[in-house]
Structures are given as structure tokens and as C-alpha cells.
Image (tube, rainbow, N blue to C red):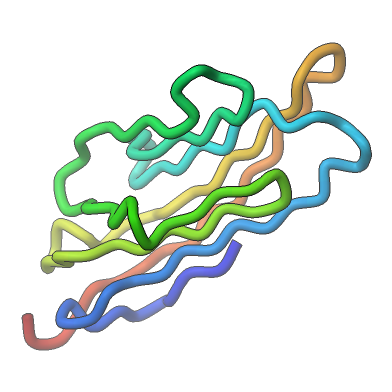
Length: 113
């Protein structure tokens, strides 16, 4: 996962999550801010993208893209201090393995805005 350590609130923020499923099928990619889920990509579901309201997090759905090997999000309308926090990408595989991997990056939104 890549995320900026320091983010200007006047600019959009990019979050990137890349993964190698090692031959297993992707079940879901979930994004969290401070342990609150705000975005889910489930490729096998009838609704592949689900968003949840989290204060300070505004995903630009049209500029965000998820695939079987990665998920890139663009966050807009950043604010201090609501958009600052611990952002986590969590990837899980389908049955029978049900493997889970995650990575977290702390982001501080600072500057004018």
C-alpha cells in the first residue's frame, strides 16, 4: 500500500493497494480509516463497489479503480483534522483458504485548506 505521509488539503489524495493473490481468487478489498470501513470492492458480488460514510473521507468513484491485482482510490474534499488518520487496505481471498493481509499508513492532512 502507498499513501502520502503528509497531504495538502487543497489537493486530491491518492491511495494505492497492490497485491499478488498467488493463484487464489480475490474475495474482497476493504479500505478503512481509523478502523472504520469506507470502501469495499467485491468482484464476485452483484454490486462490486460499496461505499460507507466516514467523516473526512470522500472517494471520487469515477477516478478510482479496482482490479484483481490492485485498487487505486482518489479522495477529494480533504479537511483538517477529519481526513487525517490511519488508512488501511485489507485484502482477502476466497474459500477454501480465506487468507487475509492488510497494511496501514498514517496520513496527516496539513497546510492551508
